[in-house]
Length: 193
Image (cartoon, rainbow, N blue to C red; front, side, top):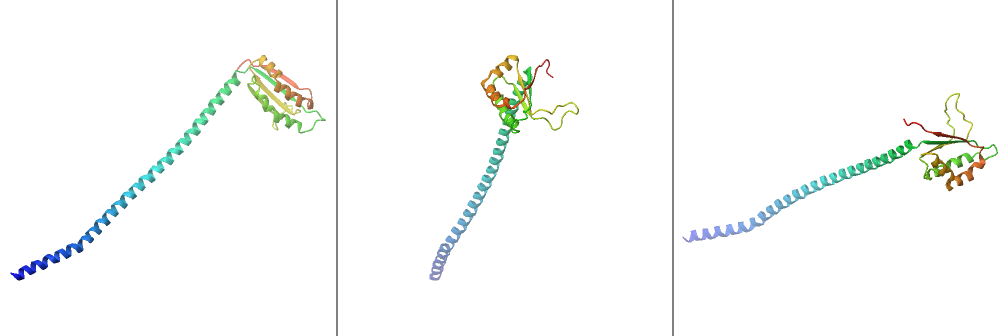
């Protein structure tokens, strides 16, 4: 019986020793599983974050594209409004200018540079100007001039207001002395295509 008691005691001691030595191994195994699980969760979250960043970039590109489209549509609306204003204008004023032989050759370009300022006069509905075209109507085009100007107005009163405007007077005082007597054509538009 003593033997049995001693065997049981040794057996208990062995279980106790084995139990204590296997407990850290069990804890280490549990920690490794938890760490692996956490790493998987972190990787999953990182993948989700990357996907969200890709979606944000895509959405930002779409917003940029839509803003450009809106800007273009607004520009088209402004252009349409401008075209409608031009179509309604019924008085066409055309001026043909030829540089005097004793004037500096740069005076024509100086006038062209200043012509855009005349667009600011309130009664001007459209303004086009330039030098003779290199390619012109065969046998009919007169290329013996320096500057051609065409301005649209609603009516004769608009032209008169333009001629009396201080900006126009300043322009003519600065430039007309260098040019021959202007050739002027005033046309009343009777139809719009």
